[in-house]
Length: 217
Image (tube, rainbow, N blue to C red; front, side, top):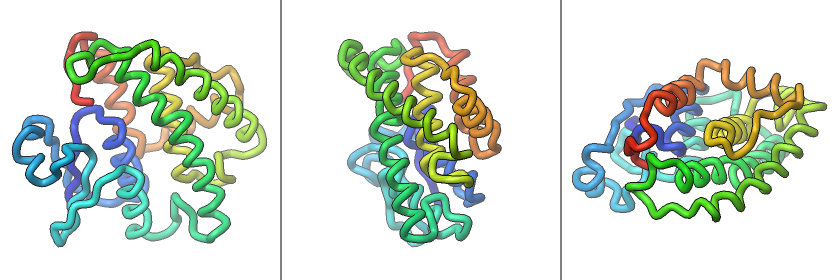
């Protein structure tokens, strides 16, 4: 299978992390240089990531791709193996996506200078996302006081989505690093996982890149 990405694209990183966690071998193709041509012929929407299956079918949308990779790679399943597990994980993953991951993506897009050449930025709107993220972090903190991970004692897709959103919001300066010991333990454990290497690489790129350097959103 072949995964099409662009550098630092949050949704592509999301899929790459899941693939590494489930040990799914993927050929990764950076389409940033061909986004206006060859890649658009393959995927007219131009979005990344996109997963090309062995039979040539193209699958888009990061969560859909993540669920597919989880299913085909076998147990343990990051999205759950029973109806109850899938419901519990799905609840936390959905909360994390809308209240942390997407706010983290959009806050960066609308406040950091390196994205200015790609979109019309609205930093005032980005600021309205912070209370939602703060509320979610409070909920997560309470949950982690009584559970190792968001959906129970085993890591799940919900933890990866939440961690990616949390790390992004902290990196952009939207929210401070949590002072809650349970969140600190969880975030340290998540970032230390080998599968989070794409996140660590993105953080290094962000630290070294000038604020004016263009990075494909």
